[in-house]
Image (cartoon, rainbow, N blue to C red):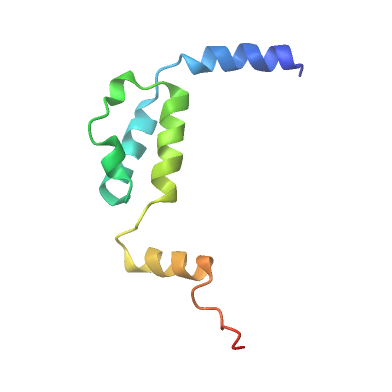
Length: 87
């Protein structure tokens, strides 16, 4: 694939409206993400595909799951329960 092909497809996808699946993901993450205040007054019907992907990425990075099981999994992944080395 040449860079010209990639630029062409990027231009096509840039103007594409976000899908219903992306809208659903954003709406779901708005209930649990700590950065939801940034997107309170956003019109989902006017978002492009790329804008929706950026919003989803931001909301997932700041997501605080409600289920204790998922919270515990996130704590393990972040290394909260690793033993500390005392100096």
